[in-house]
Length: 166
Image (tube, rainbow, N blue to C red; front, side, top):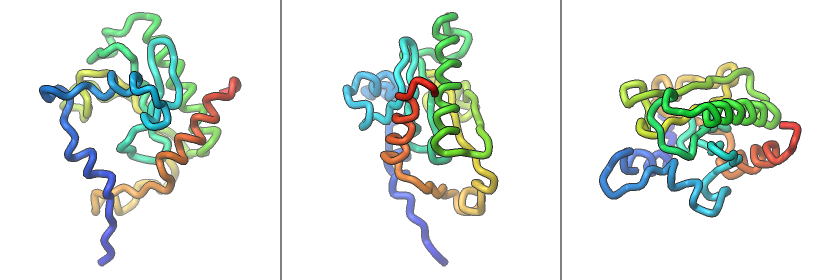
């Protein structure tokens, strides 16, 4: 039997959960880091930003996140809501341009029961999909196989998002 290692998962499984005492919400902390590449932020708007998921379902998996900490979409004001959906489209178009997926899963997980990893801070997933990308690894082995390093994907998406046509 071959053994596949996902060393990057240790950071995820040992990281504090949202709401742990003494730990700051990463969606609030990331935009203040001063280093968008280290934080994997690929685009900043006035009310929200696009960040690569550090624990992606697929390469290019982005999160559209409002700067303001909100738990539910009904708490967004009109300007926040409009910009959030505009940057979702911007992120989807950038992924399409540089990665050419066959489709997308785009959506929210609202509340812990729905699978939200940070239920107190709304965020929308933009997940590129390719025909056949879900194989035996994730079904049987509970392992994901990413074909590209996060740093390389960040460079491609950042370049696409810096172009005015995207």
